[in-house]
Image (cartoon, rainbow, N blue to C red):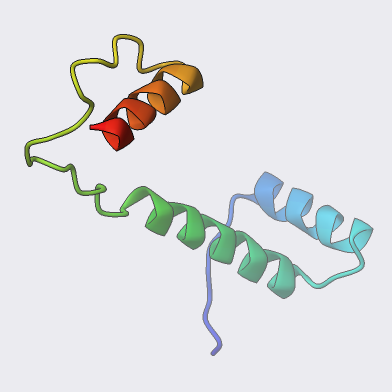
Amino acid sequence: MQTTIELNDELFTQAQRLAERECTTLNHLIEDALMLRLRTASAKRRPPLPIYQGSGGLTASVTNSLTHRALLDAADETDKA
């Protein structure tokens, strides 16, 4: 598709120089920039993860849930019961 866009003169000059340094066309450089921007924008609009609202969770015997050992000990106690 062909379209016309208006760019700030300085931005246009910088983009042309970058395209030359990267051995690519200005068109390809602009396409890459738009794809990156659109990908970033869509990532920001991801729906929030669901939060479990049910009951349950760690047993009362787990006093320090931040340690791996505490969780393993609690699992062992549950297995014995």
